[in-house]
Amino acid sequence: MSLQLRLWYLAGMVSLLAGWHLTAITMGEMVLATPLHTLAAFCQMALQREFWEHLLISAVRLFYALSIATVVGLLLGLIAGRIAAVKMFLEPLRWLLMSIPPVIVVLLAMLWLGMGTAMVVFITTCLLMPAVYVNTQKGVESIDHKWIELAQAYRFSIWQKVTAIYLPAISPSLAAALVLVCCNGVRILVLAEVLGTHNGLGYQVANARSAFNSAELYAWVLMSLLIVAWLEFFLLGPVQKAMNRWQTWR
Amino acid sequence: MALIRLEDIGLAFAGKDIFKDFNLTLQAGQRLALLGASGVGKSTLLRLIAGLVPPQSGRIYSRVKQIGFVFQDARLLPWLTVYQNLQLVLQAKGMPEGVRAEKISYALAGVKLEASQSLYPHQLSGGMAQRVSLARAFIIEPDLLLLDEPFSALDVKLKQDLGRLLVDYLDRSQAGVVYVSHSPHEVLPLTDTCLVLQPARMEKTFNNNQTEAILAYLKDEGLGPGLVGN
Ligand SMILES: Nc1ncnc2c1ncn2[C@@H]1O[C@H](COP(=O)(O)OP(=O)(O)OP(=O)(O)O)[C@@H](O)[C@H]1O
Ligand SMILES: [Mg+2]
Image (tube, rainbow over all chains, first blue to last red; front, side):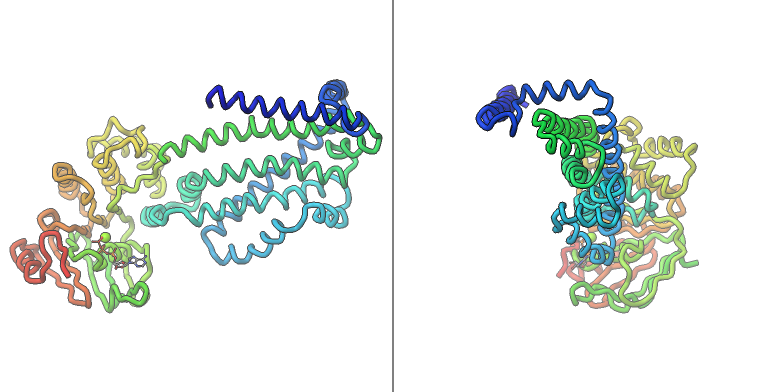
């Protein structure tokens, strides 16, 4: 990326912070803490053991949800991409999960599963899976038939078809799906935690809000953003690099 | 003993018959040249034989254990190296890991590509890629080798080079062969039987390939050297 483009990025970032600061001063710190106060609250929180405990709880929930959604979505997508009957069978469910407002899923899941980790993981998984599924299924469906012929002629095993043909061929759309899943995952997780848990990041957001502790509230928001940034950097970066290596032939 | 037998095969695409009550028997070790105008169904016949398309009617009896298929394009998986492309078909055959490396270097030496085993297909020239494709078909020791115009995309010089590699291999092999080509001169010396596919069930078979007779027939049928035909 050129220096000029980097500068534009930096300018956008600075503007955002400046806008935040100005809004905070205008509206009053009760409603919106300034960036500096938020940062101070963040540092103070980070010194407490409790902060890390809540963070760990959320991280574990996120890990479960992302793993299950990716594995199940990938498997179903691979099958549905090859077998039209399976695709049609799953179509109503996919449509339902992609169309239903997340907050309604949270309310329903709280009825079924009560408050806590199971509910949060369930919701996050359900809402993330369709993105992985759709991208995998569409990717497999559009694989050039000549590769399928090659696999048939040389009698590749199912495992070989998956690892040597399907996965590399769909890696572009899969990478896109993973970006979506990671970013949306944190958003849905926090939503579910705000509404229906007694611990974790989202619960602390709700807590800070009801205690009118504005600086702490925005410190938690900052934390959720940092998680997304961390995921993008440490998880998606290497994954996409690996996929790009596959795609050097393009 | 028949290696593969096609009986009363019917196959139509979009209501247009490509094969109707079509019969073909290939003996073990028999080498069949498959000629015919473009679009007459040569590639489709190879697909039927390889089980890549099921016939819409009729039956196929097959004793084939292992097929080697050389496609018109080299068809190497672009995200795998030359070595990995060969390794994949050995794995599919269930070849134990210990002997794979040796087999691969032997096969690559056979097509003079020892130095290229860690290249990716996009780093190969067309001729090199097609040589890997040949090596991939040879390495699994097929009892039926299907060749679909394997050299048609290459220039004359490369065609001759690769033709020689193929001759070398066929000299040492017992495999049955079905060889599709647009060039009778390329394919007839390497085969013992010739089938000229014609539309509307007029196909014609020649035993003990006599080049003169076949060329005369092709000429009569308006199938010139390039088999452009009607
Ligand atoms: N999957 C398919 N769907 C529809 N039509 C097809 C399909 N495969 C082949 N055909 C048709 O069947 C006919 C025979 O095709 P085929 O590829 O077997 O011809 P060919 O003899 O190999 O020709 P060429 O010498 O040009 O390679 C053609 O008319 C083609 O349009
Ligand atoms: Mg063809």
